[in-house]
Image (tube, rainbow, N blue to C red; front, side, top):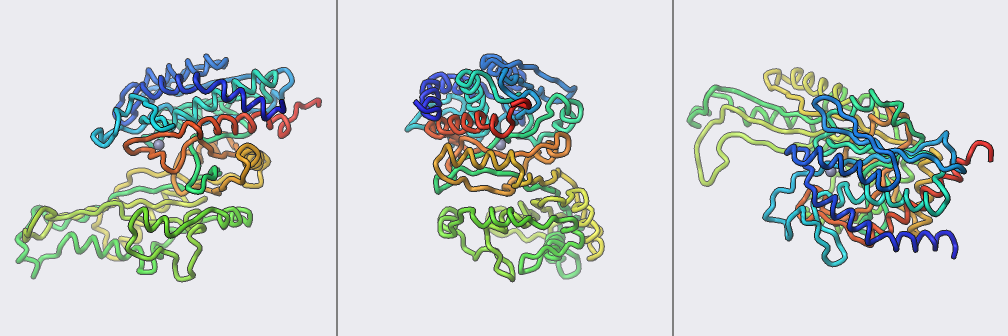
Length: 463
Ligand SMILES: [Zn+2]
């Protein structure tokens, strides 16, 4: 048997135990937003690390959910000067609305080759898959090619409010030379997606208040209206061509590198599928220059009105002049944009346009992050995926979504690639979250390729 054949057999043999472990993990609710099952899930994650032969430690900062550290030492033939870090989280999104689940979200049921349950795709299956891959490489290769660490946090689904505290304090403990991020899966074309970065975010709420009470709408002849005023303020921030007009908003944006553009151009994109899935009624936003939508998804910052409300929104007619109007706005940011600066620019913009009375409240913000696609570790991940899946992966210089990657970049200075065992139908954060068991199996095999190949990327010093 060749090496890859042996690996394949080892993964196949391990699958019943992997599934049993994963079902056990998924059946333990760990909802950070509702403060449910957090301590128990942290202890369970630590126990899984120990069962796989690693050393586990639960770190606890006051007022924060515990964070699990895992360590597997390099084998005697490995390179102890190099470390791979896995980032995962043991918390999950709330399961609501419960009525929309076909089976109870924590019953971890297998149906039609899929495992259903809150936290399967995001992010419990990835954690279990990674531990299994580590175990297989450790056993079949006579030890690991480098040190392997795990960081499993418990607040990812509520925006990782304490991760920076942990990373600052334990930067040495988590020091690594390459990092595999928590999420990922296959796209509609069956290709594995690899994200080497994330967009950032600046989230805020605008409030326009023009009176202390709602007023009979006949007074519209003489009294200004909060809803109209807010709409005008919003319209001043973005024009009909979808260009963001806030001065300073784009300050610091880093031009994409040639290899980043190249990667973006190769991403699959099917306008028809997108149109059908959402029933789109308007043409895509491609700007005056007709930008490629792939490039826009990766490289363009956004400004989105997530919600807007004021006055009477019930059935039938009610003639009222509202005292107040509100809007929630999120801006997805690209590398080197600073969310705090974006926030300041928006306030300045509103004041300059005569809307100084409109309150802008900061809700949250995170910087974008992009790893260097030329980094040898990133290239190793991309190559290993091609080897294990037998086809090229779709490489995102940065995903369109957001996560705390920039903190890892800042405190650990480590190249980061995100891969996982989900698929485009995983329904993360939604009812009927699931993974396909075949993806789980392939995903473990891919990780075995990736881990074992680290002996070539990071050969022992004296070899
Ligand atoms: Zn999530």
